[in-house]
Length: 347
Image (cartoon, rainbow, N blue to C red; front, side, top):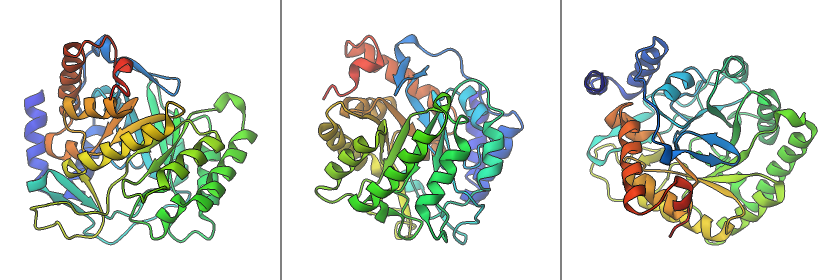
């Protein structure tokens, strides 16, 4: 079956990247995805109180509309994050807006939070079965009150998602990253905390803030203190970068956020910075350039309790997650660890 999935991945590369993504979603909905076996016990871990069979998660952007979280859990991911969802449907930016940088094993996107809106998303989450499924929430591009958009998403999805991610770090919605500045972030997280505290206690779920890797000196410190002050559980480091390291692809100058292999060192360095500042007070998730067991292990050692990936799937297909888990288990044993949690922050 892995050979068939490899052939399917190569066939999808003959399509426009966004058409290929749509075909992949359709195939998964039709039941054509891989099915993983039982995870190695050494990979079992916890994420802000959530029990995971393994620490390898699917990053948002793949399952924008909460359509295929169940097939992706069956494919072997330890958790799946859906979204980004906004209160109202929106078409996003004009196409083309998704580019494969094959020579660099990277992706540039300027999607612009295209999604079907909150109601279909909530209806699908309401029918979910077992497994950890998070909701990545955002704001509509033309919203008069973007903070209110985040609050609306939190209220509507309360009790439906295993955890929430507050996405203020996409570079593809104009002005969104300005919410990372201290005053704006304090208002956003303060209003979200107020809304959370007024909701039923039985629906309480961990909340994470997703940050960019492109932060100036002092910004990480301010973000950590603001997150702690609002009572959030953690931070996801990081979203795509607007920087352009050495790239070979002819698409290297396209506008948008860069993800994939070139983001690995930058995001892991930023993760280590947040880990040092948080000093155990927050749970961290590492994202950016995870394409192997060694890359996942580097994120764990830098302070991540779990990792997320998406761009590497573009090049290796859904069988990648099994390889990463196998490699990670081998590395953990070789390094003398008995469980994933022992490696977290080992640097």
